[in-house]
Length: 338
Image 1 (tube, rainbow, N blue to C red):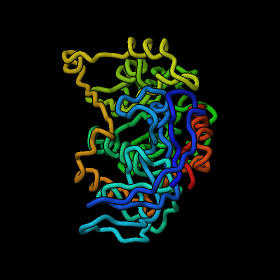
Image 2 (cartoon, one colour):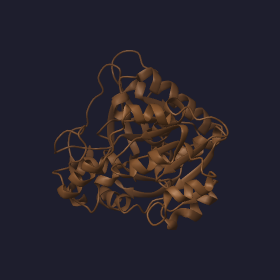
Image 3 (cartoon, rainbow, N blue to C red):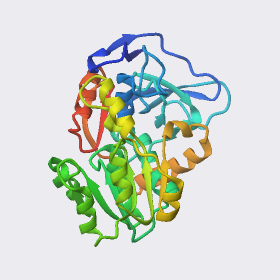
Image 4 (cartoon, rainbow, N blue to C red):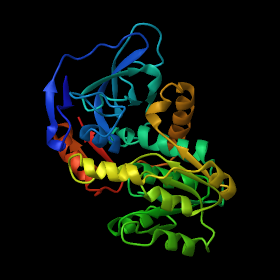
């Protein structure tokens, strides 16, 4: 089988294509002939040596795939050979075959292409957990999504609108027209604008009810200040660590030193809540993941959600896909085709 291996920590060029024997599925597992794999910011952090959960190089990243079941392990399984599935892989997705627990693979709705299916598991589960489980967003509330042009950002926008919430997205100006075309209510410039002033203007000084923020660092302090009373901040990333193609230790330490620590008394007196979300650490909550994914796929099948793929790259050009995503050039999901 072919796979893309991170040979050492560094720039995108440290990834190379290698061959190894195709693995066989064990009990309770299925093997997928991968047709598409999603690219996530966590993959970039792992490549740069900034993702604590990642094993040391050489390693194969990739958290989500779409393809056909081509083998099943011993014992009962809900899947059959030839079925189109999408799956969570937790590493190993940048390959032409992937072996996963059968319960982490789901039948893909017929309406989805392989590229669209590969764009769903990580982004939509992250947005669903953040909005529906943690923040419990309600109709009439206002949701601020930082990085609205990314995969999680677009997923969050769609899911919040299903709950009839008002959505404000922050993104670079080049992405504003595309986001407006997708139906976002308001869009602001988080790089060059005054986010707090923009939020005050759009909410008549009240602040927002829910914020999804993957920026990390001192930007989280700004997010906390823009919450309304009873507001909820969900932190699900630390993209501020990444500047340039390789790890910048001086930058890393500066970001870590400026990250906020939320005082319990201030949280209590401000009537605000702060959540942290790392989807990889919910792996043991399998029944919860299954229920959430089944609900999402029902909405995709019914046309209420739509996966947005910004650009595809062949598997052999995974390094180019990483560079494209690091440049924040995407509006939607970046996908590798196999």
